[in-house]
Amino acid sequence: MSISVQTADFNVNDVLDQLAPQRRDVGAVAVFVGKVRDINTGDEVHTLTLEHYPGMTESAIGKIIAEAEQRWDLLDVTVIHRVGELQPTDNIVLVAVASTHRGDAFAACEFIMDYLKTRAPFWKKEQTPDGDRWVEARKSDEKAAGRW
Amino acid sequence: MKLNILYFASLRENLGADRETLDVDDAAVSTTNDLMKLLSQRGEQWRAVMLDNPNLLVAVNQETATPDTTLSDNDEVAFFPPVTGG
Image (cartoon, rainbow over all chains, first blue to last red):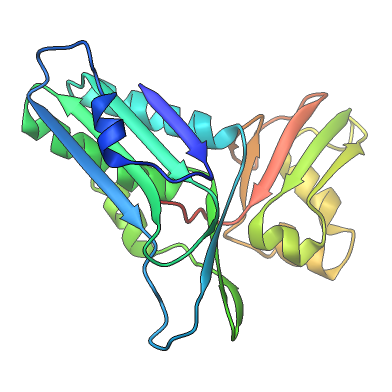
């Protein structure tokens, strides 16, 4: 089980290589990658700044993974979340789940993302030539988390 | 008791404070709600954030807290808006 909050980008293939490397019973690996998309229709560059609560971010993600491990049969989980200044097309977050079968891998991966979006202490700020604004939490994210 | 208080994101900007160490009277402050009432007395912006804000979230020692959560000496208390990671 691996959790990292970091400014550096990640490489999905490297993460997959390090997922349950000694095991021979991994039948399914589900991966989600969240990316920065461009909110502008024009040509202006915008920056997305990710702030977080050092210490609590890692422990909150740890709790989410622990809950996923209780609900499903998982062999390994990796979560990487970037912080700092990001641009459109950049990677933000990765959740990779290894399991024996795909049902558990898919479900756990989606669960971890839904809970991360509503329980992990990160905050996004958009900076554009027209000004800065804090991204607001979405009801749809709360609803998604509530499904589980 | 001594409390280490952190403010994040838009709260930090609205209050103009990111962290502080505060000495509070144990008799006056025993829960996070007590602390919020104390801080709200600092002025308009503080009142708006601490009392008139249904979206205020609190953590004590990096665990999600409620208004009833009790506080102890040297606790870390963090105030922040709804999270938007992922």
